[in-house]
Image 1 (tube, helix red, strand yellow):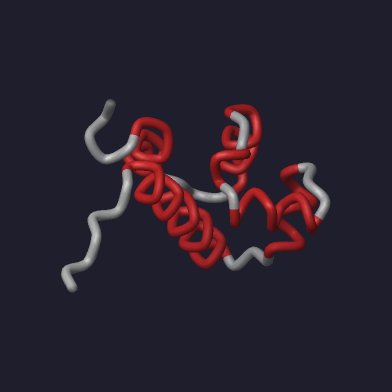
Image 2 (cartoon, one colour):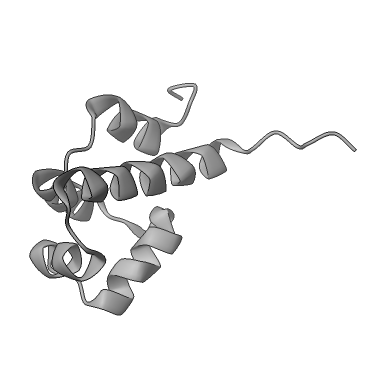
Amino acid sequence: MPALKKSNTEVMDNVFRSALLGGMERIGISYSTLSKRAGFSSPTFYNKKNNPGTVTLTELRRMCKIIPISKEDVLTMVFGEEGN
């Protein structure tokens, strides 16, 4: 059976997780350190990672100030692949 095409939401969520983990790896920061610096409890941070649709713009801005996330990734997280 052929693989199903991922929905735009799945693509946006995967880009969020990839950018988050990649940024953390680049600067060598742990989940617990990032969650504290971004003002989240650890359980809340894990929830945001697993359910990126719950991340607010303010929270995304805080994370972008702490870890390197490209503008292209942010645009894809918000608008999806097609920019719609």
